[in-house]
Image (cartoon, rainbow, N blue to C red; front, side, top):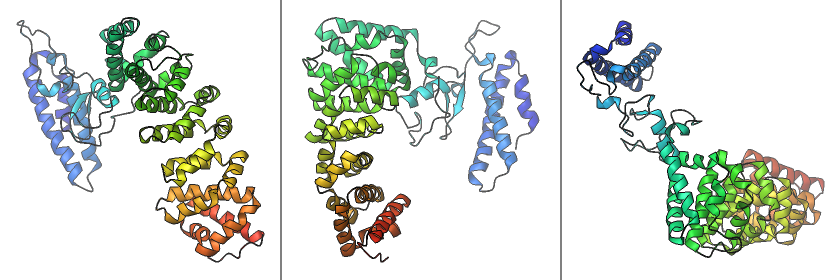
Length: 441
């Protein structure tokens, strides 16, 4: 274990002692390695060991920031040599805010956070997976956005009013940059002019004139909407929602899927749910769900689910034929888990329950409960059946027959999730009160 004095001495090194500082850093790193190994290897390591490791790491960080290790001339006009360990492996520059990941590698915070923000989940050096952010990423992006980035964005947006070939080239580049770089996505929020510039090549009513261009620009919108600060900016611009709706109807299947995904990400904000629902977007979303293209189904279902979390949109979805379309897909065993979740959400609306009762929902749901290994699916099925049995007494006979033949409800009352148990028990109580069945566990 290192003496406290060794740690304190690192605080008093002068610029003229750069070689000693480097040697001290090596010593502390070895000490830190021993401490970390002791912590990892011993199930019952001492608290003092952890404290010493923290002090050693703090001292090492202090050494990295010493002016004597920066690229400045020494007293003889020569550039001091910075050890590689003091440079960020990503930027190659002297680290200003070093952080140590779980893999043991050290990076400058702005650059490793940029790496993570771009969707990478491996350590750049060790390639180990499961890496977590050193701390929540908030207000850090601007540290790695340069004026050059802003200038490049402006040049790409200017090409949107140029020739078709320039538009297509710029659109592909914007699609790529907004996918990879969170800071670049954030740049769009700096001006209200960026969205209309981006979408200027897409004429309303003729957005699919060039399908590739349309796909790239709609996908760029999707990428932009991932950034929290852009969600209102995108949804509230009068050009966006109409173009997204048009892209659900016409364009490549990838364009349709990405338009649906954009509605899903924008719907993370409740006020956007209302804007999107009022615009009429649920109709083409449900039509696209009905088409059943495998590439688009999941994004469409996610968008519908998110939008229908507000009451007004439940009614709009039901009026657009959601119940019939969703139930048919479930009967065909297509995207069952996602669509059951939507159906369970819609079952709080009286009109939806009426339609379910008319469309053979009871037998379909009992079939899923019997055959499924997914407890969440069973839970949603029994929750819908609970609503039906209290809304339509005529369905009690069918539920009773299923229970008498297979004991499906009582089984869930014993073995289901906590919510499934409550709903199943409620159905059994309902049956008992109406004299429809004698409950036998």
